[in-house]
Each structure stands twice: as structure tokens, then as C-alpha cells.
Amino acid sequence: MMAIDLKSLSKPSGQRPIIATIFGEGGMGKTTLSSMFPNPVIIRTEDGTASLTGNDNVSLFPLSTSSQDVLDAIEALATQDHKHKTLIIDSISQLATMIEAEIVAADPKAKSINAAAGGFGAGQSAAAEKHRQIRDWAGSLAYEKGMNIIFIAHADTEHLELPDTDSYSRYTLRLHRKSLANYTDNVDLVAMIRLKTFVRGGGEGDKKRAISTGEREIICHPQAASITKNRFNISEPLPFTFDRNPFADYLTE
Image (tube, rainbow, N blue to C red):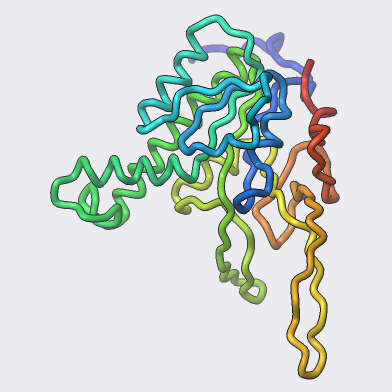
């Protein structure tokens, strides 16, 4: 048995790059917010960077057409010299679609992910394993290269049936549940960008209407209505403007 030297113990400092997942509906500013992190480079599985036109601070890998392209880009960042401080994968929802298509294509008898790899959920398990590999490779850059890691996802909703409360719905990532934990469990931040919305009406003969001023906010604290969380003791919604990264105070130098 290998002995552990107690001299190797350390105190928690919290000073390391951030690993985060940012999600929301289309057009909410997920890519724009992510680009506010220091010296970013983006691995694209979809071409959603039109809002960054003219932003010379951002670098783009060629559009990925396979999961291997994504792994190759991560490997390049791990093995080559560069000055990038943030890796963004945009998006893991489209990456999931890509991975599922690859798994189905590899099984001549399968016409869908549910029937792939022998069926009975094996196809989604194989997809989750590929997500785990990509998550681990990307995460290693935080420790080996000092890079922030940002995973961008599209939003979805799910209905929860819990034994100790009434059923309810919440916002989540557009990913299969088997792959979800790769981007929500061992991360520092799961943040959702949404429009500030108010409901009006609802009186007798009056339909309820959702009203928004177009103002955006970031939800990253734990709540029943979303899968959001953070490790920075943030307990209230954060304002989202296009001139400042609201997480700048939590970044290492």
C-alpha cells in the first residue's frame, strides 16, 4: 500500500480557472457572454458566431463536422504553445446531435439512436461516454494550461416526478439525461440566460400574457425552476449587459 504524506495536504484557495456551462434559448447572448472571458478560442459545432463579427479578441477553430474534430482541437490546445485563456465549445447540444448520428452510422442495423449499439439504451450510453471523454479532455486544459472552460448549450424543459412533492417542470440543457451530468455535476457554474418576463392579465375573461422589456438576466443560483448552480455563493439573478462579464470578479489573473 502506498503511503500518503500528510505534508501534501493544502488549504482550499478557490483560485483556479472556471469550468462552466451556459445555456438558454436561441439569441439570448450565450456566445456573446462566453466571448467576454479572457482571450477566448471557440470550437464550433454550429456556426453561431455572427454576433462576434469584428471582435478581434476571439479566435475560431474551423467548423467541426465530427466529434473527432472536437477532440483534435482540444488536443491542439493541450500540446501546442498558445496564449488562449478560455476554451468555448459552442454548442454541446449540437455536439450531441453529431455524436448520436455517428453512433447510428456505425451500426448498419440501426435506424435511430434508440436502436443503435444493440438497443435498450446502449446507444445513449455510448453517446454519454463520448461526452465524458470530451468533457475530461476539455477539463484537463483548466489544470494543465490554466484555461477557463465554457460549454454552451441550448435550453429545454423537463418534467420531474419526485416522491416528496408535487410534480413540476424546470429548465435544463437540451441533452439526453445520460449525458447531462458531464456538464452539470463537476462544474463550477451552470448559468441560464433568459429574458426578464412578467405575466399580466388572468382576470375574468382576460388571458394571461407574458410581457418582456427585452432586458436579460442570468440565473446561476440553485432553484427548483432550473438546473442552475454555482460555487461562488451567488444567490440572486445577475444583470446581463453587453459591456461587462458579470463573472469577471471570480476569474483568476
